[in-house]
Structures are given as C-alpha cells and as structure tokens.
Length: 148
Image 1 (cartoon, one colour):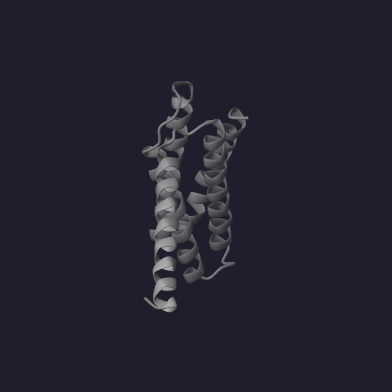
Image 2 (cartoon, rainbow, N blue to C red):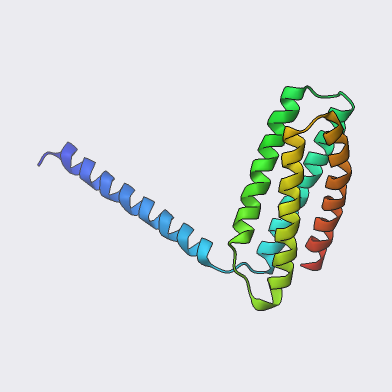
C-alpha cells in the first residue's frame, strides 16, 4: 500500500469518526430536556422574530420597502419561527417548566400564523399584523422575564 493510499484511508476514517461524533452530540442534545435557560433563549428568539416582523409590517404599510423585499423577509422570519415552534412542540422539559413550555409553544404558534398571514396577505394585512406582532412581542418578553 502506498503512502497516498494509506493517507487517504486514514483521512477517510478520521472524517467518518468526526461525522459520527457530531451526529451523536446532536442526537444527545436534541433528546435532552429543555431547562430554564433553554426556554428563556427560545422565548428571546421568538420575541426577536415578532419584533422584526412588526417593524417589517410597519415599513411595508408605509411604503418604505418594496413588496419583493417584504415577502422575502417575511418568509425568512416565518421559516425561523415555524422551526422554533416545531422544536418546542417536540421538546421535553422538567415538570415545573411544562406550563411555561406550553405557553411559549402557543405563542410560537400564534407568531407563525401571523407571519404566514403577512406573507400571503395584502397591504391591509401588514398593518393589522403589526399590532398583533406588537402584542406577541410583549407577551414573549413577559415569558422571558418570568424565566430569569
């Protein structure tokens, strides 16, 4: 076996081991129950998505952004919020945090729905969504503060 061939196989084995270690770490972390800090981070992320969506809706309803930019950005925020909602829906947590997990999951569902309406709606939907997103921002901020 030549040096090149042997080096190739060594590199291949190391790569496989690294990928396996990464997959194992991801699996272990995804199966671990959420703690208080994890929920606080999720609530903060959702609050940021709601605030960004609100600002985008306000700018679009005032004619300060193009429709293409508005639709693209709304879709991106909606995808992130939907992914967060999905991960919360499947999450496990300690019994004392279950109520807060349920509340944050519900708010994530409302956020995803509002962002979906913005993405597929009209200019009037953007103006209406701004108020709803403002309310969600405050509710998520309250949830985040409860977890401190």
